[in-house]
Length: 304
Image (cartoon, rainbow, N blue to C red; front, side, top):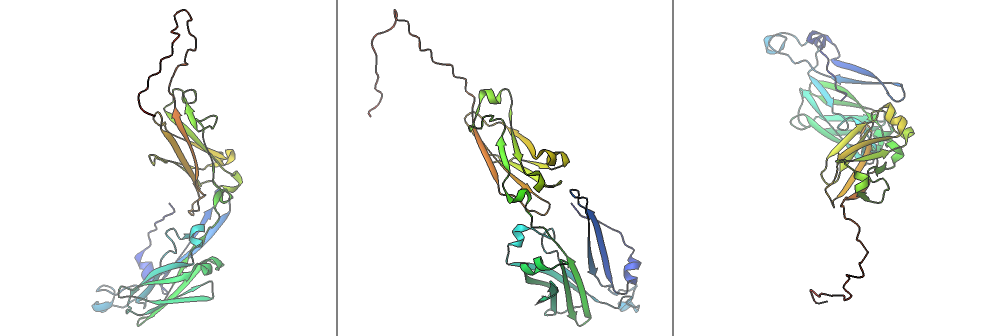
C-alpha cells in the first residue's frame, strides 16, 4: 500500500541542528520502467526534559521548541481527476511545541500564491487553497511557515497529480459470456450444467497500465470480484470473472469499473440477462380424426 517504516537513532535526531528530516523515494513505473523521484521534509522539535535540559537544568540541543506539520493534500496525497474538479482543496495541519492560539500559519503554493490561517488552541489549522494553484505548481510542493513566541518553524508537503482516467475516460466493454447470443436471456443450452455465469470486460490496452484494477459487481447481491491487471491482461485487452448463476426467472445484472492507483475511474459499464432454463416440451399438434371430438368447448371463468 506504499507505506514504509524506518528506525532512526534518537541521538541523531537530537543532534540535527536544523531539526528537519529529509526523505526521498525512487519509484519505478511498472508499465514504462521510468524511475520517478519524490522528496519531502519534516520539521520537528526536541523538547527539554529532566535528563536533557528543561527543568532538570540541561540544554536543548536543537534550540528549537516549535514545529509545523502540513498534512497530505488528499487521503492518498495524490490529486486525481475527480479531486481536480473541485474549486478549492482544504489543507490542514498542526503546530507542535510552543505556540499560542491565533499564531499565523502561511502556505505558499505555485511559488506565488500565499494563503494563511491562524491556529486554534490545539495548534490545528485549516486553509482552503485553490485547486488550480495546486495543479499549476510545477514542483507540486507546498511550503509552509509559522511564527510563534518560540520562533519560526517551516515545513514542506510534496504531493502528486494524476488526472488521467484509464481507458481514455470511456466505459469498459462488458458482456455476459454465458448469454452467448447476447439476446438478454440465459437459456438452458447456454447455461448447461454450470452453476455460475462468466462475464468479461474489455479495454483499450494502450490506455491501461499494469496495476490498474477492474471491479465487477453483481447488482443484486453486491458481490464483487476485483481483477488486477498484469502484463498478460494488458496484452489481451480483457479480463473475466464469474458469479453464481441467478435463480430461474431472475435477471442477473452486472456492472464494471476500471480504476487506477490514483483513484481515477472509468464510467460504469453494465449488462444484464434473465435466466429461463425451463424445460417445456413442444405441444403435439396431431389429432386422431377417428377419436377427435368434433365439438369445441368454451368455458368462461370470469366476466370480460
